[in-house]
Length: 235
Length: 235
DNA sequence: CAGATTTTTATGTCTGCACATATTAACCTG
DNA sequence: CAGGTTAATATGTGCAGACATAAAAATCTG
Image (cartoon, rainbow over all chains, first blue to last red):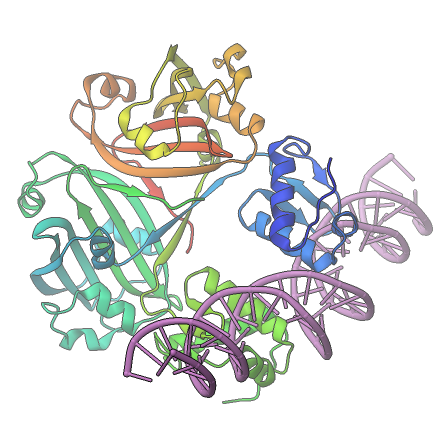
């Protein structure tokens, strides 16, 4: 192999990837230890560590103290979905965003599937909103949302005809952990009418629950018209 | 505030998160620079850097040289999906995995939607497989797969009745980048029969293309029976 | 004053070193 | 030899200091 300079952790990362792709290091193999690589690449151990850690974060390598670093046997593809605010998703496509509040009331429980997804106790004091997101005036997604009024008391007084509830929440409960499920469902007559779909057509659906410090903040079900596809970025 | 010791980058990370949740630092705010935080927490700048970088990787902070570090205004939720091999997914649920090869032939092109997803030139020399994954003997997913024989020549000679094509590929083309789309579709009569669903029922569908160094390795379409849900881990 | 140039500055990264920690491997010990 | 204890070791993390780099801010210039 030609003499090559490794100047930074990225180039080391690339070289390690190259060796894995070239099957110089096969799945399951233990690769040389950090000091050996640092020696080979003529750099500090910390730099090798940085490179290997980034590969381990992506599931390409598996590292354990004392046991060493090995090429993952069955690399689980870690797809990262950037779930943004629908307004941004729509505007990113160069379309005009619109938002309609269809209904607003109080409820005392989540639908059972969302409650199961939440995994935390759900209070009985929920604000329930049903709204429609529009792209250039065409229905883009039907959203059903429950907001925990214990956590986000101010939501009660908000007028969600002006600002979408998601956007308001995101700016008032900044950091939150959330869980998603993705599934397919058949359009029932009510949903079909909102989305201008035919009853029974297959619709893509995202359910989400959002927590902060173990307490439910909000639960959402978004239903998309026929043909909608959710794409990942790159793994 | 009580005197508190910050010993490592994780505790600093937690403290930063706490301040964001408590709205001491609001979305859009520029937070103190690394040296200031290192001084406050009585640690090295590298340690603060580690903490802030991890939050920036998750989209909670936004960092730019010279401009500083700010709390993300509209944090895109970065959901990470661990797409594993279906056999592992099934066995993780304590079920017995089975695999049926339904058809195998040669084709010269991908379906248009998968070709668009691939984003790289697709050769005309493709091995096409149709197979069914079973959990405790019940259909779990219908899989349609195309393998680029230029990249994975040995696939031609394989007997995919024994080992599933995915599993074989994963161990023969170790590191690969891939793109996914998720969508809903209606069961056509053929699919319906394989999955024991009724024609027209909504089905969840995952399309994937896998590349290595800019060349297509494989394209897959997996279709799941009614009621299937894909869950994320924690964001 | 607009536009180009220089300075300043916050983050990005590397180095070399030290110690912590989780495991494995080797070693007792009954 | 089984089972528990100890030593060895690869990675995890911390520190201080230095230089690199991107980009904002200040300055110069026509």
